[in-house]
Image (tube, rainbow, N blue to C red; front, side, top):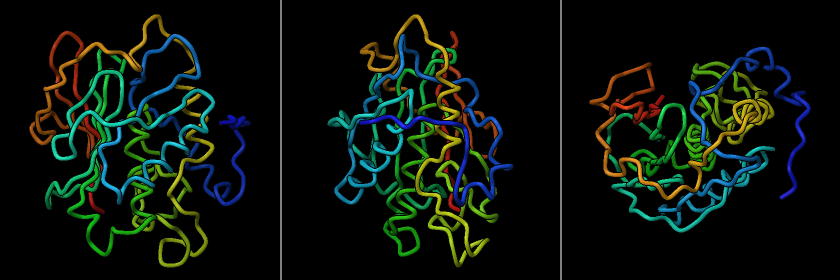
Length: 254
C-alpha cells in the first residue's frame, strides 16, 4: 500500500478543531520495539462475521501511517477468553455482559516496550439498537486497536464537537446533525494528527524487536482490570515486577 506523506497540516473539517488536537496523545511511552521502520504488526482475527469488515477497515486505516503496517492473520485464541499471543495483537468479540464498557485494549509491557496486546469488543452492547451501527463499530474498533500502538485519546469529552478522529470520545460517532455540532466530522477513522503522532512515537528505532516476537510474556496473566490499580478514569495497571506490567484502556459506555 502506498504510504501517506504527512505534512502536519490538517485540512477540511478537522481544521476547525485543530487547536484542540495539537497536544501529545501518546499513551505514556508505550511502543513496540523494532529495529527499523516501517514495521509490520499482526492483528489476529478472532472476531465473528459481524466484525470482520470493521477490523479490515481499521487495519487499512492504520496502515496509512508512514511508520506502521498492519496485517490481519488468523487468530490464536477465542473471543470470550481472548488470550494474548507474544508479538501481536489478538482481536476478539463476545458478549462480556452489562459491565459498562464497549471495548477494551490491553497491552503487556516490559518497561516501555509493548510485547503483546489484546482488543475486546463487547457484543452485549453492540447487539443493541443504539450501538449496532457502522459508525459505533468503526469508532470503537479503530480506537481500541490504536491504543495497542501506544496512542492515547485526543479528547475525552463525550459531548463536545467531534475532532474527526477515532481517538476522540463522542456520543455521536458519525457526526453532523444530532450531536454537539450540526456540521462536525465523523469519528470513525484516524486523522492526520494521529498519523503525525505515530511518526513521533516511532521516530526512533530500538536494538530489539517485540513486534512479531515469539518470546512469551505472561500469556496467561489476565487478571480483571477492575482489580488492577486505577491510573485514570479509563486506564488500569497491574504490576508484575521486574518492569513488567499489564495496562488496560477502557472505552466506557457514554
